[in-house]
Length: 130
Image (cartoon, rainbow, N blue to C red; front, side, top):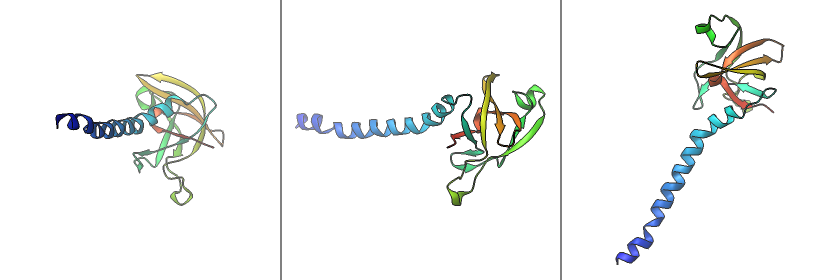
């Protein structure tokens, strides 16, 4: 009887480990995708968190560090796209020109398709654009 319990009990543990692996991937993917962002990449700016729009307009700053570094707003970007076109939470497309770490946060110098250049923080970096 005890032998059967030992052999059959592994199914629950396998399900638990698989579930934890899936949760880990969901948590780590956004971090990895930001870390894999390189200078020259085209990316979407996003104002969404967990698929919910939080900030519809994202500020571009004159220097990394934002207002705390004495920077001024030099432009604004859409943080959301049209849901009917499959672009929900995929805002303006920009090109990454530079990246710097200031006070433990990564700041990206980005350029819009209209040639406007400014800095945004890592929390607004979304998916790579096609």
